[in-house]
Image 1 (cartoon, rainbow, N blue to C red):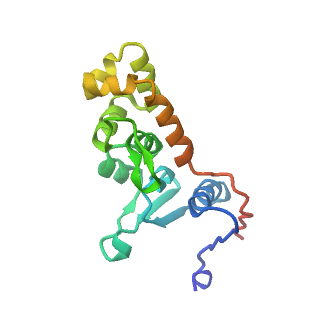
Image 2 (spheres, helix red, strand yellow; image 1 turned 120 degrees about the vertical axis):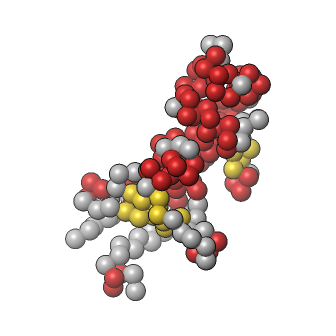
Amino acid sequence: VLRDLGVLVVVPEGLEADDVLASVAAQAPPLGARTVVATSDRDSFSLIGEHTRMLRILNGGVDASPLLDPARLAMVTGVRPEQYLDLAALRGDASDNLPGVHGFGAKTAVKLLQALDTAQAAFDDAETGGERCAAAIGKARTRSLQAPEAKPRWLLNREVMAMVTTAELGLDLR
């Protein structure tokens, strides 16, 4: 039915759905296409951009399903799409059994990213005294960033949470 409606359907074998979504979102714009990712998975927030929107399926589609663009995502989450992976890696993801940096939830991560732009910048600041971090999130949370296990936890989470954008899909939009 979707093909009959002119919707591109991509079903490659051996790839995770997240990686297919990310690869289509990355590879379609150079071919002249815009994409809409329809999913309930917050991890896909990082795919939103100039040529990609996200139809966020809530409660199986029973509740409102907002169409998110970069501005709406920033309004809803407090971060830009390119910051979302840092937010998720700092916060962690219980559904994937990935604990976040100790003492960090979404609100603290958002405050930090709004002030320092990236988690890497925050860790750099924390390593040199943490004045900017402390101004944004307080001294106690800055000490959490300075803990020896904090940066390795964030890096591991980023690596596990990052989606593949280079999967061979053989996209042909003709």
